[in-house]
Amino acid sequence: MKNTLILFLLIPLWGFAQNEKENKHPIDIQFEDCKSGNTAEMIACANKEYDTWDKEMNKYYKLLMGVLGTEEKAKLKEAQRRWITYRDAEIEFAATLNRNKEGTMWPVFFGSTRASIVRTRALELIEYYEVETMN
Image (cartoon, rainbow, N blue to C red):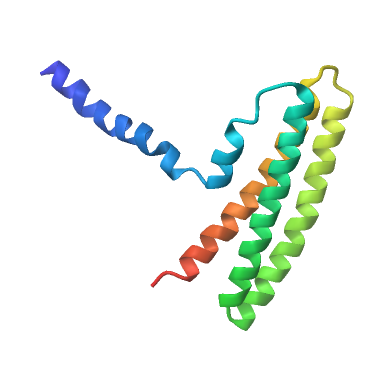
């Protein structure tokens, strides 16, 4: 009985592990393997990841603007302006925080932080778009 209960509890976890890669965004999958190597390669990877997420964010911003009404467009435009102010301030803070630290991993951490900030916004816009275009 105890083994059956354990098996019953583990089946959902096994299914979650099987679907974890399927649930990842293709950009996450694209960049998961390039976070190893030497410092210069990891920094270049983080910068490329930032650029890729930034393009994805802009793509979905435009798609979302194309399906919204006038009032929603104005609100999204204002929200995006404010988000850009937040993004710039957050990146400046992260740069300042990491600037005076010793070690080669801090520039990598900073690059990853930059990418993560834009990734989060891109995923928000993707979700808004998907909800807005549901039938």
